[in-house]
Amino acid sequence: MLDASDRAGVIDRARPVRGDADAARWTAIGIAALAALTLSRLWLAAHAPLSPDEAYYWVWSRALAAGYPDHPPMVALWIRAGTWIAGQTPLGVRLLGPLSGLLGTFLLADAAQRLFPAARNAGLFAAAALNATLMLGAGTVIMTPDTPLMFFWIATMWALARFHASARPGWLLAAGAASGCALASKYTAAFLGFGAGLWFVVVPGLRPWLRRPWPWLAAALGLAIFAPVVAWNAAHHWASFLRQGGRLEAWRPALALRYLPELIGGQIALATPLLLVLFTAGVAVATLRAVRTREAAATLLALLSVPPLALFAEHALGDRVQANWPAVVYPAAAIAAAAWPVLRAWRRPAIALGAMITAVAYVQVAFAPLPLPPSIDQSMRTLAGWQGVAGEVEAARVAAGASFVVSDEYGLASELAFYLPASVPVVAVDPRWALFDLRQPELAGQTGLFLKDARRHDLQFLPPLGGAALTPVGEATRGRDGIVAERFLLYRVAWTAANDQGSALLPHPGE
Image 1 (tube, helix red, strand yellow):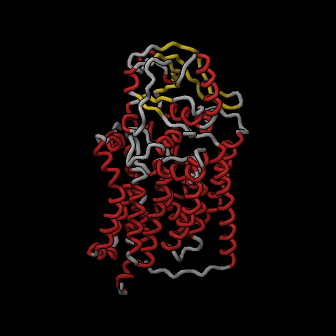
Image 2 (cartoon, rainbow, N blue to C red):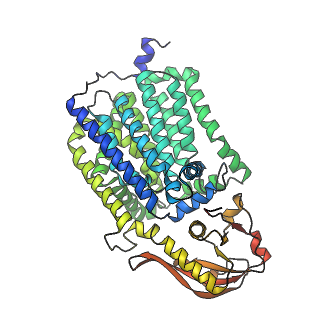
Image 3 (cartoon, one colour):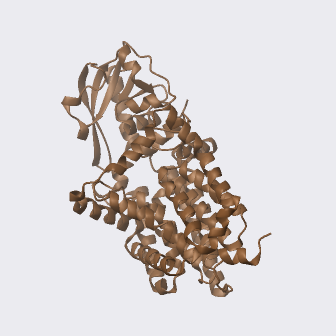
């Protein structure tokens, strides 16, 4: 049993405030809004076409492994579970996104209230703020490695908050398991282990726990969950470690004026403008309190925010930082923004603006009322028209007398595998496919239809098929309401046995 001194080292002294009728009313409104939001996300997940990356991750789910060339395997496991429940459909691919958003919202709200029991409605505001971001709005509908990463990141924070509030060591084991699952989702989750470990070093009251087995057992549990990913990399020439680790080498400060504004602009878009201000202020206050007082709750938020932000800012000095990368900071930032009374006046307008922007994005994806060009409309650029282009490709295949379809672009090949009839073999040509447990085609002597994105067309690099002869036969387009998002050049290709060796036969939903 823990004595009083142990508990004092974990629990910041704050007198909880009893809920009142107003708080109960807002909680009820929040739950109703979350239920409606989850239903809208499920509907959108069922009706929006798959993006190329989603189709690619769906192929992963049909060839389960402990690792892949780009990321760890959790997204494939989530898609496999979703398609087992809802079938080989867009909803099946995305099912766990809206559901994880629902559960993650409750975990985030509870974490905020456990960390800051004296902050009135901290959990409600933190949950509302995070759900109002375009990042979570998109991340719970479009299935990417960030979707499970965000859920397990929040789950880790929740377990640490429970430990903070109760001093029960079992919550450390829960945090270790959740952080291991986060690391098996995306390598960015290394910041979780780093921040949590540093938390026990920085906060004086937590240091005695380092003389006990529980933090070390939690770390061992997380690493054990991640161990299969390490083993897969070791057996495949460290493929994904080298691919992702290679990003850290960029250092070209002369390009900072190009990439730093992109980084900031991406966060304005994904967090939405006022919420970004609120999140930034919340993290700043948490960091100041951590430096001045070593308060456990504020220090945890700072350690889960500042290190990743510092790394992404450094990376932007020499290379592009994708807008979604810093999103791992949003859960801690949402709690920080909800915890400090000085920021209270910003909360409702920031949440209202974020919710409105996210709602507009949902309507555009679902109904496309605005005739926006692909350069502005992300949904047009990635989601629109894939069923239509599959129909055009199938008609061109029949007209060309081709027995199969082939592409050297992994996203395009994956889309064709998902949307073409199951009777049409789809072949993918790219060195990455050698790392998958997929069948090689046996199509020597047959004629295929080769697709190439017109924007990437360069005769110097064609053909990519080991010297196979290519004959132009036309093109196909995808888009929406007369607006073309992408053009594909079509070639008839004479297939050889050598081409079989460097290719993979992709699965179909009906198989």
